Image (cartoon, rainbow, N blue to C red; front, side, top):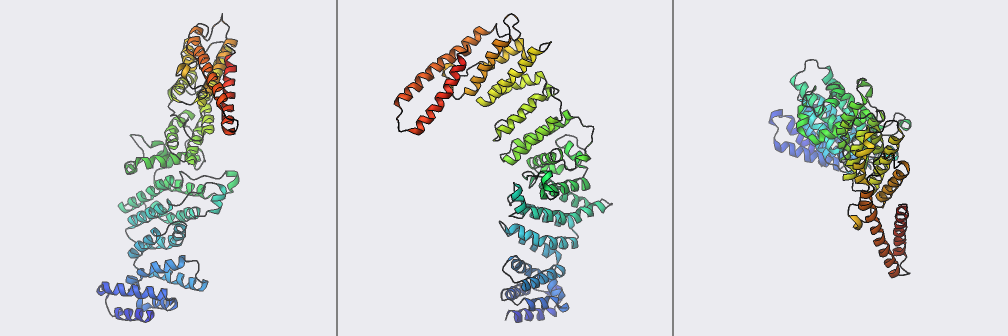
Length: 541
């Protein structure tokens, strides 16, 4: 019945001119065609589409059948023989139908799915979508619309993080990234080959550049890369990143100009609309580009070799800040890797204090890695830079463990200064005394929570003990001996009082503790051990 209806509609339309087709004809053709597909009359439908007499009708009305055919192709339960027929119908519709209508129809089909069906739809439709766009005259608009739709859908897919997840590729993102490069290549080549620099070509170039910058943010900002020793040339994200940067170099200015001129008032590249479009998005994209080049080494051979390590560190600090402001651990880790990469290029103690522009990154979740980077940063600073950084962090960190870490570094610098022939003015004498005022200090006097601040207090007592032993009273290179009175009043006496108060408190808690409350007793025991350690160190004085 459905086949007869469709043949009847076609027979009526065959005698009409193309411009005489009515809206009613389109609707009837669509309904009859869909019924043919639903009822399984696909062989007869294929014959109707193949019939040369129906060419004009299929050109104008056939695009309405793309949706039902594609949905059948996406169903896994179709027999192989039927799938072959569906593919033949699909290919013929792509070949015969109006490319303008097909473009909109294909993009609607790409937007429909969710979850794992997103990648299945994209992988099926990318090649026909490319074919359709190449038939259109207004290519820049079509390419821009297609790439924007594809990127929006891909951004919904979870990015695999581990080697196993990348290899499994459950949601198909890795496959889609590779397919997307193949989809984009012909349009990039068209821009490169067009020597006339027409307005349409410039518009196409702009659309491709926008896509490249978006891709640097998603998925490449959060994507993890396999170790080069493990990947064997099969890392999909490394391939995608390399191709995207290659596109940037080919159709824009070389990427060194882009990367080194982002954020400047005077630029040597002219795509200012990207700056105006979304500053945050561009900042993320440029940070991602810096990571790919400097840490992953992608296209790094294109960078000028004359750039100094200090310049590269100063340049990358803005990108590092972008990474560390994010909440995803994978992105924060990239910021720390970029910082490490930049610092390792610099000789120890050669970084002048004027370069001390680093933002605090001690609050990020990966504290162990962060402290390792902080130590590397400290090592690169000159004496004045170290001194300035120590003061800043003691005043702002609000973390006992971090403060203990800084105090240990101060001790190391004092030790190096005392061993030198010429004293370092920043870690001896008046400058050191000013720094010790921040170290040998209880923020709330005797009321300070000793357990909360135990790491800092222990480190401070160890430093004080070291100074008493190493700095002879007659030499007094550190200035300690002239400050003992202040240290006694501002640090040691309040600490004694605080310890006595804490001792009385815990003795009282032990008396009232019930024998059966094992968890409470364990927690109290840990506190008492920490308290005893602090008390033991104080006895030295």
